[in-house]
Length: 102
Image (cartoon, rainbow, N blue to C red; front, side, top):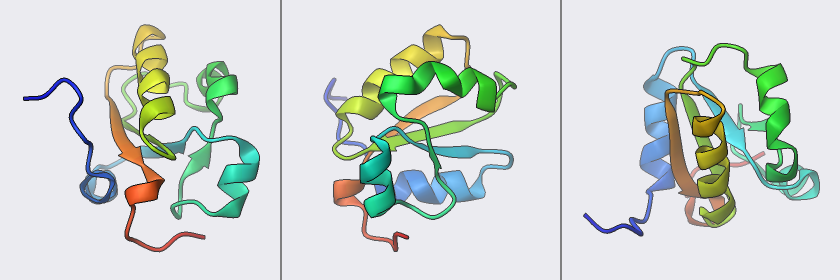
């Protein structure tokens, strides 16, 4: 398995939709989120990732994290894991998403 595995955001969103209580987190900046995001996603920009603790208080909540390319979501996942979240997954970048956005 490659260290720089390309996460398939389409498979990630599908897994998110099948996971009870899961949250889909978009860590792009607010203007990027407003320009188009995956339905039901929550915008918590990487620059404000510490506010996730206010929004998601249960550390066992499954979190599916994405950004534009997968880079910022990787950083966010590392931070969230360090903050004690146990079920965090980087699903990659919206640039490769083929579903509908809003």
